[in-house]
Length: 205
Image 1 (cartoon, one colour):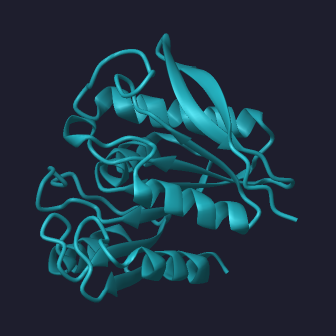
Image 2: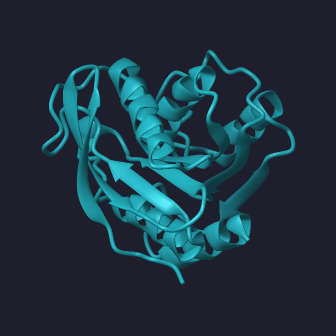
């Protein structure tokens, strides 16, 4: 039976104390979930981030969502994605130390951009799920093949993560990745959160 109870935890990243919410389930499956842009109000309590955590917990994964450095009670300050990528690696290591060996990395918007950097250096990521990677907003010029990218989701009306730009990127990242475009959805999945949840459930089935 799945556990959906999260507890507050802390881990360290380059000497900074980072806060997070951790849910433990039996087995070796785990997921680290990253949040939208800190300078635009993004944090681990974002509705999309919460939905991703809920779906993974229902699938009996242990989950860890956390605030990047400088967000909420996490120490440090915004570092333009560089330090945030270290935060992701530290979160992955926390999950590994908790005994999880099949670890997913899921990110929404800015979080998915940061995850790409972390993916280049981490060897413990099983697969990556990207939600609304902001290709029209952040620099993805260093695109490279990453077969760990298994699924990408965006909204039909998402001007920050346009579907056509993502289709071109998939050809570079992983042409076999699942790609879903949610009809009528904007970048914030307004009125489409249930559809997002259903798609995530099917991806993880």
